[in-house]
Length: 334
Image (cartoon, rainbow, N blue to C red; front, side, top):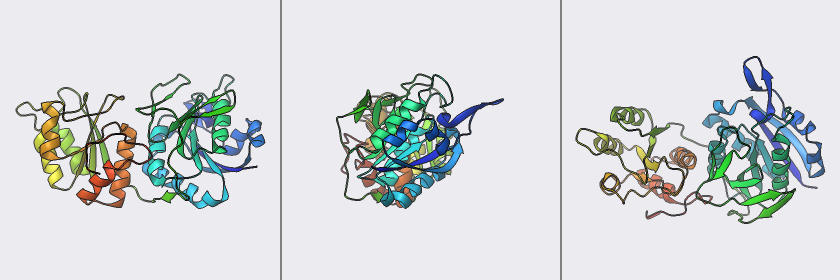
């Protein structure tokens, strides 16, 4: 029988009702007690890393999770990470860069309703996560409401529905149906994973809105080593006289800052070459472009890259290199 390590971080699945609303109160051991069928699938060991609402997740927590997997990697056949849904996609993306090419499954799951609630989705998600954790799938994945989604491609797209996550610009790896795993895609693997233990948390996210002052972007660039800019459509920034965005970005890149352009539109990705408002950013300033990457993946990838190097040419090379199928197309010379 395979051995699986369950890592607890809190989240809705482990929450109980208090006078101030839901808050994580259950341990990993208590979660397993509510789903005894899991012990028929594998030998389960439990480790509680922290017990927080996922709104409180930080890059330090991602490093803690990755280090726990690394410390116990040789002891177990798979890993299940119980996590809150609100930032699960960010954590899944971050772990995809901190733990690359894993031949073993590293599965994140959670729930929209606590496990103690009568109509909860927790038990199904938890059992499905363990089914995947003992399968031949590999790498970092989210298992939720019957879908197995690659860690670099997940996004929370619904706040209350049980189908909380979507796979963005990439098909699901597999589906769970009546307890059976229907596998379609197997991620890349190596005989042993490649672990990393550094992230640069000084990466900001700037979302454009009509009339936004470029001073806000200037402030973010001043206080961070890199900034991800979420623009409109296929990409671009205001170019009317006095808008100032072009000059702000040019000065930041000149100071060695990493600037990445992406889109607020969640499907199909960016292409700065289409319109004049993007063409000059791409061809004159040579900023980075996320193309079909999710915001969650682009942001955490930049944190991972800047944790390894600040050299502009190396930052560009690593950002344009597909990792865990985070990037399907790029016109860059990677």
